[in-house]
Image (tube, rainbow, N blue to C red; front, side, top):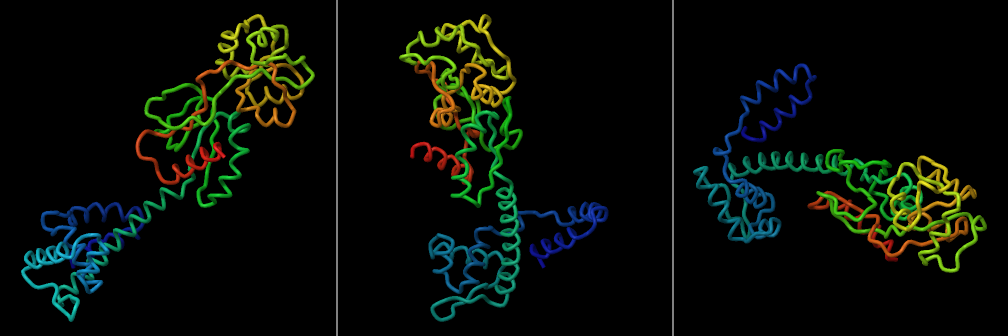
Length: 328
């Protein structure tokens, strides 16, 4: 029966139990080995199937986005290959001969199986959630408050947020996006900056008298006698404090593992904390924290990254939505 018969036979074998399938399928693979040299051009077969189904070379040309002449040439090439007519004129259109009808039915079955396989694979790729990884602190204090808008605008795109203090390999771990802090570049990754990571010293209002100008370099130096809350999981803040003129080794401080805990203690009045401004925006707006010092203009930021190369549509949808939300 040709190609469709093979497809149907494979479907029948796929219904067998795994034990029986492994033996029978391994034998039938040899028997069903396909020599593509025995099969006419797939473009020609596709053109013939469309013409036979639609009863018109013109409509087939429109469906396949080719010319009328190309459809006619494909049909003639098949007729020459098979040594018999496959189409004949019928009024202003065409109709398949008896042999052509048999071929058209078999092609419709085979192309239908191919289309179903493609749909299944595409569905499998979109069924899993879009995955994004970032630090626990950035997720809790910057990202999550914004995601209600995305879920409302795109309920058809499930999103899973993974938090990790260390770097992950996006390609190896099958992760679509990462939000990373730094100046870049990151080999094999690309994407826009979401927000700058300007460093600010914050505390509960009233704990430390605020300076006249938090932008002045001396604003950091006058905090040398304050009690600091130090996030031991992120050592870069130590080097940035040192660059601002403070000696982390001589500061009075409490070490805490995890920035979410540091911020909770800071809101409670336990001390001063150095934070990226993006993480404390809401605390500042709602008066839970106040700014004591502000770092000068830097080039560090939070970047939304994806593996280099083509971007899947739903990943691009999220990137476009998040960057547009920031501009709004």
